[in-house]
Length: 113
Image 1 (cartoon, one colour):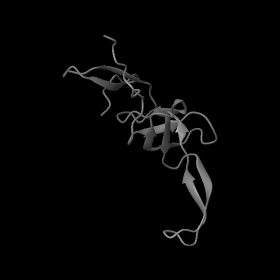
Image 2: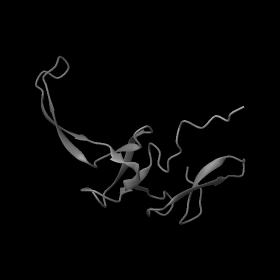
Image 3: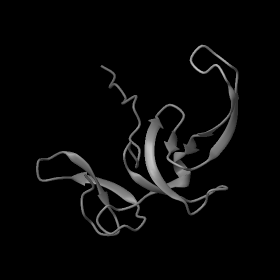
């Protein structure tokens, strides 16, 4: 019998994490992850990668116009900020005391959330 593969990839960031941008126009900025798209491996970060979007008038928004919106950033360009130390850190996975895989900070060695 063939073994099934996990279709959902494990990523180093999750919704609600605070991250630092490593590359692009917004390099060095920090923000909270609002949404993660697993299939495209992109994350929507608060206040980062802002684009101007032209919207047509609709029933919900009759005036339409130009709106500033956050665009997704590739996950490889983001680094998690350790909640304990407040500094960017790499993320690993190891078994906790309950025998479950959990993310941990490679800088401090402490478990994340």
